[in-house]
Image (cartoon, rainbow, N blue to C red):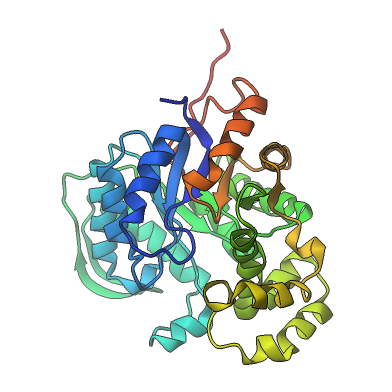
Length: 367
């Protein structure tokens, strides 16, 4: 079994999987390959996160696990607190509960109000109280009103909490209240540096050790060893889908030209396309879409040979990331890249990291 790379993670069931059972082989392969952790990005189809997390824990022994992300308002808080406690004990402490804001128009479309930063912060504090065994009576706050909440008075669980962060408010919340912050895909080098600084500064301002908040770069990893149509879907298809749904935020965050986004959205094919591009567009259609996206917008990704991908992954650490999620690829897709990465991985640099994606670092003491 390969030594574990706790600084690297992957998303299980990336994209649009054919079956949730694919997760089992992915987690077994990822653990055997030595990847540190596997994450689930919840979708309300065959990617319901709580079910999948249980399966992940059942078929692995070392792999860190986590949601990245689920939404706090889609389940009763007592249900989520019980899920996290169950996962914490089932996995032997390998689990992190990571939440995110989601897209406002999606929340409205399913009858929920858009999520506010204050709600997520209140939810995190409530989870920690419940995990400590507290009885919470007559609760009234941003996430609702509840007459009585309690898991078990004997509980005293230390369960990491993560935040998928994009804008300044969620980055600051992650720094002051979370154990891990997961950034978005296709962040430029400058954006990554700025986001890491925002998180660490917020942690320090809150009186925390900035090193206790792990900031994960979510880095599209699409090597040239994959077929062209697969690379097209995972690179052009994925970014174009982001631009479809929250392109303004992507553009403003990265300092890109909004005129390019306007031309992209007004293109007749894009404007009239039904559904999400990375799931429903053909390869020929994605070739047309690729002409609308500047090369520099696609550049923040690990592309090229396995060796080139490995060097680009290592650069994410040099820019300040504590961990890198190899996004959009299964362990089978990542095998040659991980092998190349091991050849350049600095000895001892990541020995302090836990497998749990939000787990606290081991404080190394010099002899």
